[in-house]
Length: 541
Ligand code: GLC
Image 1 (cartoon, helix red, strand yellow):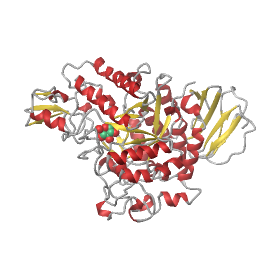
Image 2 (cartoon, rainbow, N blue to C red):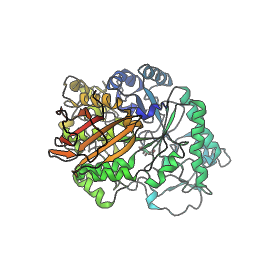
Image 3 (cartoon, protein in one colour):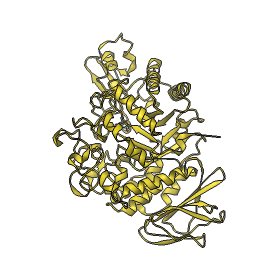
Image 4 (cartoon, rainbow, N blue to C red):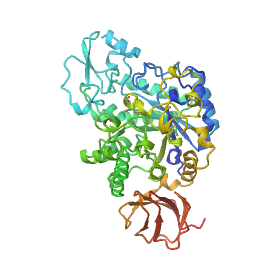
């Protein structure tokens, strides 16, 4: 019997730095996170994804690593990490960590050695050129911030490659010594108990642009090597790739089931937002039809928002504009000409029905669901903060000073807590919502509980169901002689929808936006405005 834990997991991502500060220095830390594990366990989370916590100059939220074998001293020690791992395991939670291997910080000793000593073994850890090719502007990751893929280094007397910020020189993945280092890093953290890695910027890792003589096939084979190494050390550990790529490129990441276990579902995410903006089902149907079949042991990681911008670069200009018009009409809400730097609740004007509809969709689409810290309480954003920081404010635990995140004076906080307006910690916080049975946190707990009882969504085969209402998206997931159906009304009006399918006799209500009367006639399904219902098929209990 197949038992692939990641197919029915509930993943929660957080940044240790902004989650909970235990020592009043204004920075979240591992001891603080450990104290809050019961909050996550009570919500039913089964797997944590930690954003980078390595020593770092922190000029890209920790995605600029200085030492892969340690914990940023501001966040704690390796000892604190091991204690945290122990406590997470006690609560049945697995831990994935970010592995940033496309680049290091320019402060990493490898780069310091590489730039200053041409004879050093570290010289070819990076990509140097005295005469770099002209840039393709489409390849620059932060187009409004950087203007080239190459930067001249006085000390080295040459240009180095960087797809991201210029303080993040790209590692040379064509170099077998670099590959060995990366496996060694994985081996280290596996020994400390992690269940796998999020491979940051995976598409850039294997692209090979700018690496002289790089052979793409050879670069892609690196994923097979990583997988082989991982399997040899820990059979149930997984690789999760961050790769926002076209449908045709997806097979490069999954291979024949011998590369990445999981891939962020960027394509479906963008079509989901188009469906929400249009209040129509078609974009979702289109998005799902566009996705290729994936090997049975592989999986999609579905999400609403993560720590970066909501990127809309896979859509046409006019589709992207529709989403901007609906959810981010002001320029300050947009970023890099391709995305939105807001959290979901303010995008949806705080409409609880619309927020539930969105999460209900995400939790029921084929794949594994990902929540992000603060989603459970409906946290907002702070558009006065620069760039992506708008959605990276500290967790709001209570209505105490600093939202209960830290006892430090507010001006010492790593980032300000949201303290004004309807998303202020005074209104939106864990303690307050836990006292209120109707609050979002209790709804999230409920959807997690029901989702865990529906492995069909995680393991099953998808059938998109035709309906007679263009606003209603209906789908069925079948697995191991059982099936669930979910029906979502993307419009702000009542409707009764007919499913054009005769394959089932009885639909049993599992979950919905309100208690509905049991169906007499399986064909006519009433739905409230932005209503949603999940059913189990052909069962009476
Ligand atoms: C990924 C991360 C992002 C970071 C970039 C460079 O896209 O999600 O936050 O800036 O990689 O490491």
